[in-house]
Image (cartoon, rainbow, N blue to C red):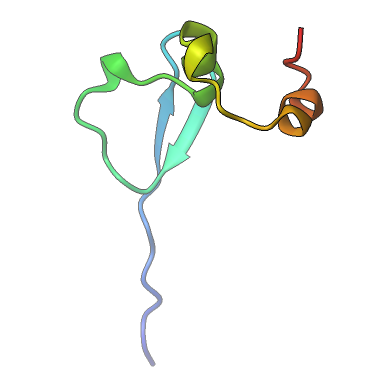
Length: 61
C-alpha cells in the first residue's frame, strides 16, 4: 500500500493588516511580508484592478 504524501503548511501574518496566510513554501524574510490589500493601500497609483473588482471588495471610495 502506498503512503499518501503530505504537504507541510506554514502560517504567516501580514505586518500591516495582521491577516493570516497559509502557504506550502517556507519564507525566509517575514518582516517584509504584506498582503495584496496592504500593497494597494500603500501604492494607490499601482492599483490596476478593474472597477468591478474594487466595487466587489468594497474598496472604491
